Amino acid sequence: MPVDSYTYYCTYGPMVLRRCRKLLGDEQASRDAMHDVFVQVLSRADELADQAPSSLLFRIATNVCLNRLRTRRRRLEDGDPELIVQIAEQTDPAARSAARAALDVLFRNEPDDTALIAVLHLHDKMTLEEVAAEVGMSVSGVRKRLQKLRTKLHALEVQP
Amino acid sequence: MTSLPDWLVERAALDEVAPISRDRITAAEPRELAERIATLRADNDAELARHPARPAVAQIEARIAAATRRRTQRRRRLGLLGVATSAAAILLVARFVDRPVTGFEPSVTAPGTPDEVTRVKGAPRLVAFRQVGEQAERLEPDALVHAGDLIQLRYNPGGKRYGLIASVDGAGVVTLHFPFSEDAPPEATAVSAETTTLPQAYALDDAPGFERFFFITANGPIDVPHSLAALRSLARRADSATASLELPAGVRQWSLSLRKPDRPSTNHESP
Figure 1 (cartoon, rainbow over the protein chains, first blue to last red):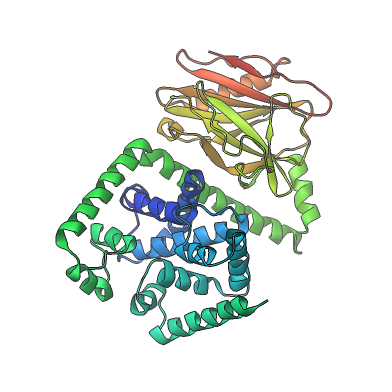
Figure 2 (cartoon, chains in turn brown, blue):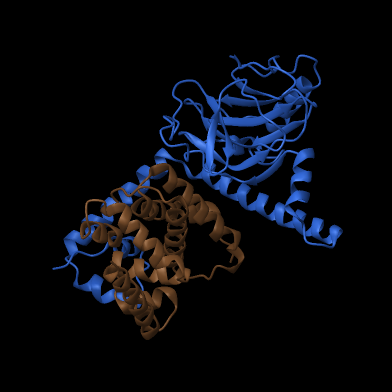
């Protein structure tokens, strides 16, 4: 059954906007990101399965925002991922840029879905089982990705 | 008791909680969950009242349609050329037509630039930005521009509910920028109430003299073909760089002229 764009937007638009705000902080950037999400989703409206779309939109919104954060390298503000804030709090006064640099290194060579998994688990507090269901992987696959990420993070921590 | 994460409350509000998360909902404090859901729903209503869905959906659908057109055109071009298209060839095309391309972000400006997020208050206004490397430079009226410059537009409707954005160049060519189709119905001219960046940027062609952007606004839906006819009529005139459009009563016009190397232009507004 074809998706009605108007109904779809009214139902899920505010949720997507809140998600983008939470990750990006900036209002205009969040609205732009929300539009990007709906362009991506509605471009493939014919392929949308007739099941709960909030999960799909949440994942796409997260990826869109992560891409914006990667490419824009904007300054950290309230609402940025807790993981980044935590790292920032545990480092020196030059912390925030250091944390950002660390995450850049951390994610530079990682597939996009690893970043998504990390955000869902570490920032959104999804259980491993929920992350696995969200991204369509096995729990052990999710655990391996996170373990690999932690190893890289540890390696960054022990660097002089 | 641990508070539920936001994403799970969102899904509960939509009645889309996955089976794997239902235990967390069941274990949640019912009153807190109900209050958070009510807050979300109130926020949904407020958001859709402040930013009505129809203009947003029209823009999204127009972006999808434009992307589809670009893909089709690209396939056609590749088919005709039979070889990989080089960047130089793309630039050559840009010299001859106003070419919509993926938009850049005007809010990214040089460090210290005061209008990082431009909010033009009062009367309806257009602001043009030129992409310079990784940054966007705001273009003042009469700014000098060149063929190939990538221009992005941002509008503030100044309280008007409907708008049409188009440009006229020194070669007499009219290009519609918003809404995104010349046969769009009047309702498609509904604009966002706040400062909004058009999703596409435009590469200027090599038309001589000037590039003049018009922002036509009204409190009611605007007739797109009629407005385009007025623009084309103006484009044929010798004083098209400065003359006003002939528009129905109640329809306001504002224009921003950018100067090509061989000719000055002016910033012109009329009620």
